[in-house]
Image 1 (cartoon, helix red, strand yellow):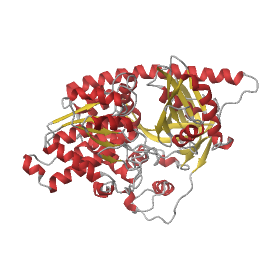
Image 2 (image 1 turned 30 degrees about the horizontal axis):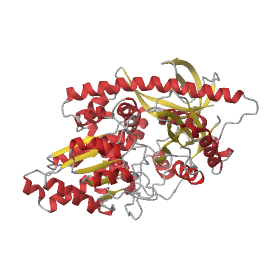
Image 3 (image 1 turned 120 degrees about the horizontal axis):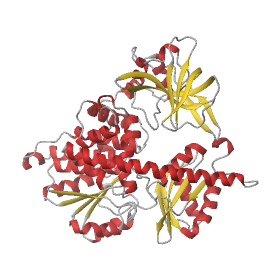
Image 4 (image 1 turned 60 degrees about the vertical axis):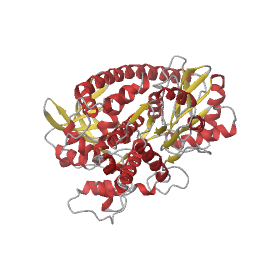
Length: 571
């Protein structure tokens, strides 16, 4: 599918920044709507206060009572990296604040599905919890919350997903996206929400003398920011200023060696040097290894890694996660190839037109990997994609990924409203969602989903757009400026890493690692060549002169560090 390179708007040229900010960075920040120098201040003093989160007082009251009365607390998490880090933050913080009995339970996605279901409540009874705390889930768990309260459990829901028409009747709900919440940042990940709850609980115990009465030293919750940074980046939530603070502070602690053994071990198996870790490393190297446990087996492995205080044990668990991730990659590659083969066969049919909203299903596809396949196809085809897998008992489970211009959860809501009974359940965000439906309704849903997507997207919306921050001068294509860019983040969703474009002469090209295109590039103004790599190259392009969209990064190989262009697009 066609891609186009579009230069970002120049932004506010009147923005006043410190004199030592590089001119290119000024341009980059302005195009990302940075309106004031304080938005570049990622110190903890700029963090938004927890007092603006609706439901916080009620949540703190339940948890403070649980600590005082030595009640049994159970954290019910989710099976992705956000849920795993949120669970670890809750368990670590509550133990540090004196919880006598705190445990966790994560639904196995293949047996129970997502969230606090009545079945999970039954499974939780063996742990005899008096208080249930959901992290990264619960806002749509009406039946599960009701089942827990019927059994005498107090329930605190902490979540960040969009709520439905009705809220669960929990003892407390903390979710920045619930109606009436005045917290300015609606982009907190699940791990960010529970971190804020722990900040509020600590403040209450401090102010009420709870730590003194219990003989406990007030914990430094900043020690948990490595987990908050990992979960926030891995969940691909927009990095608004508040999230950039959380990520920046977490990365700083990791670089300084002040991270938990689990994060240290995951970095080691990923081959990433802790001292120079960046947000992209957390998103592309660490997060997928943690996610692999929830995709293929049981996220309890990942949470155990994050909760371990013994580096040897953490390394063993991280090695298991690394092996699961390699297995996940092989499964994903096979599924992606099968999906592309299906689309190629469709294209051969006379008069066939690729649907605007694409639904794909194969009976043998892996339920834990369909989200990755949907994401890869969405990137390749530039349209919303839902990939489905069989979930047993005549049901399909799907994972949806969207493109700009279509709010995927709202699209599913519209389909459900127009076709009652077509969907069993659904939930999610603007760009990603999960759903389930009866297997015999797949074709009906495929037609209904495509029709709904067509109401929002036209042909002009189905091109891949690469937003460029302009050209770099030859003198800026060096390791010094690459380091400047890396330090200027953290970059991520909603605050994208800079992409530049320019025309280069190709001195040499070769394939490495089966799919990656390694290039040596030349510019007339430079005597030296410039290294470049195109991961999972879409086309080798034999031309002697090419226009590239690229990121400027640092390549480390055998102790040598050089600037390298990471190619996003070539023409």
